[in-house]
Length: 87
Image 1: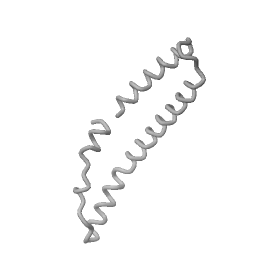
Image 2: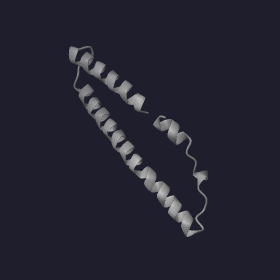
Image 3: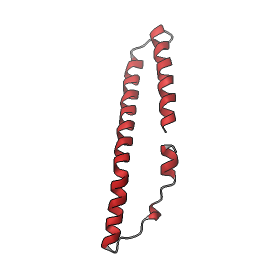
Image 4: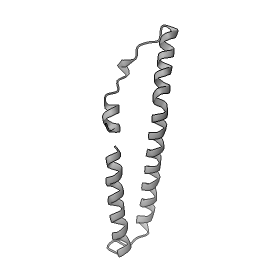
């Protein structure tokens, strides 16, 4: 499943107010079970954002219609398609 599909099914209603120590431990266990995946996804998204910031800076220095512009445009399209499959 994709990231969007996974998180669209998340609901805060899955959790109720903590009353017992056991509930606290279950919440902590749930958090710890998902945290590594969250960090990995966050790292991937951060890399994607960095790539797009770099693309944007590079675009500013290119002349529209030039060969370098067309090459960059092709690479950007490939990158967008690759990352859209991630989400």
